[in-house]
Length: 243
Image 1 (cartoon, rainbow, N blue to C red):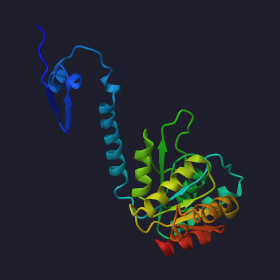
Image 2: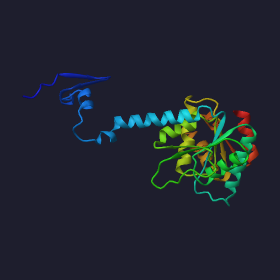
Image 3: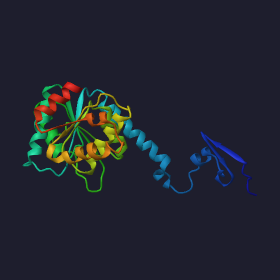
Image 4: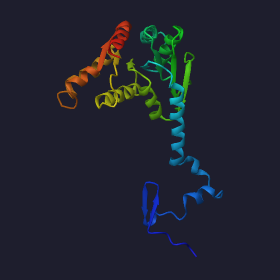
């Protein structure tokens, strides 16, 4: 004889009715060793993995001190002028007392980590698990690998005093516009953002000023949230002055 389901079921903050009412309690399912084990791949279980990544990130970076995140393309070669610029910027930040955080990969990230490590500063790499992604570069002294982009992005924002954004692709754009959005909406305060490489970024900045602004999609002061420059010393100097 089947047990009749109640008309309404409370499960924590959830209220379930009709066919949504389960035929067993949470404790029953926990203590019953029978049945499939695909529960380890379900969304509720993923919450635990997400929580563990936050705990690892917060614990590993809690005593980091003042730091700056440098973003840029993983495809930038060591003989590219931008590689040398990222390295020099990191050295300048190191001399000013800042640690340097990157995504931990090759290209611009490697250059920045290298500059920080070679000058005796703090060199941090926050990697991400991707199908075709690289391991942490050899110049990362403190490295953490993440499964989830949003956890990693939280660490960039939480432990950075601001961003220096070198030429890059979709990932670089993603981090840039998230920082701009958080700054615009007041979720973060006093967050300097340097766009390095005027030839690369000028089209974007012009579009913000000539298209977005007249359309009323952003305010005049939103354009002041970024500083465009081409000199490593200027990037460091402007950042330090506005931190």
